[in-house]
Image 1 (cartoon, rainbow, N blue to C red):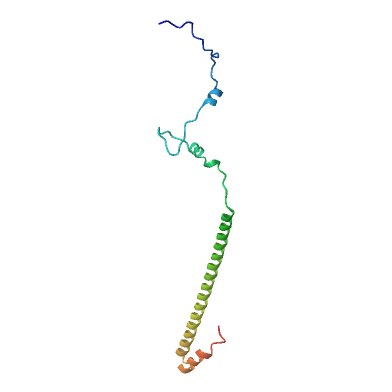
Image 2: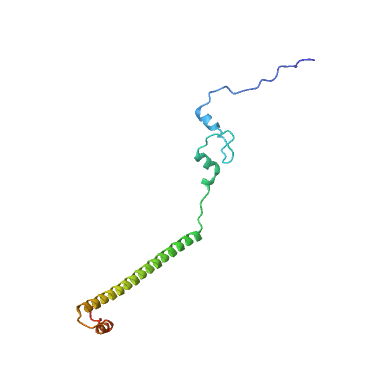
Length: 138
């Protein structure tokens, strides 16, 4: 066996130079960030996870019907509150009327008992006064 007939062709290289910080930053390849797998157990910041997800880049679109729905819910809530407050006021008015009626009955009973004690009228006259004679006072 014979050797090569001539020496091989030399490979031409550019002269070696130092790598700058800018070049290093340009050639830096970020590690893969996944929200599903983290085989090496790296601690990945949340902003990197969200950036890898791509949700932050999407444009949020809110439907007009959602705004209408929200507004109608607010109106319904206001109407319901007004209805509840009206019912509460009516209940308070009814209880006040009932209390005044009971107070008037108690006053009348007290008047009758006072009259019976003093003996100014007979029992039959007191009963008649109770039924018909109490309009002028109050």
